[in-house]
Image 1 (tube, rainbow, N blue to C red):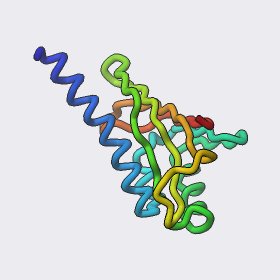
Image 2 (image 1 turned 90 degrees about the vertical axis):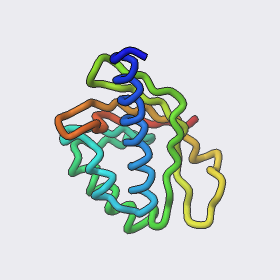
Image 3 (image 1 turned 120 degrees about the horizontal axis):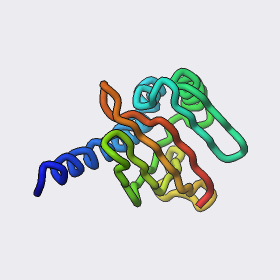
Length: 135
C-alpha cells in the first residue's frame, strides 16, 4: 500500500472513531463530551427547522435534552458511507437515531439518515456540520 493509501486508511479510521466517540458520549449522556467533538463554529440542522450554530449552543441543547426527554437515551450511528475529500475533510452518511431507556430496536419514527461533514484541525477531526432527516 502506498503512503497515500496508508494515510487514507488511517484517516478513515480516525473519522469513524469520531462517530464511535460521539455514540459513547451520548450513552453517558455527557453533553460536554459530545460537544467537544464539534468544531467551535459547527452547525447542526435537525428536523422541524431546528438549527444550532456553534459548539456551545450544541452543548446547551444537549445538556437540556439529557436532563429532560433524552435522559438515559443512547445514540445509534452506523456509518454507511465514509468519503475523504482531500486531506482535511470527510463526508459521512450514517443510519442514525436514538433509543430511549429499555428500547432495544430503533423505532421507525426515529430512524434517520444523517450527513456529517468533518474537518481535520490541529487538535484532530471535528464535526463541522451535521444534518439529519427521516429515513
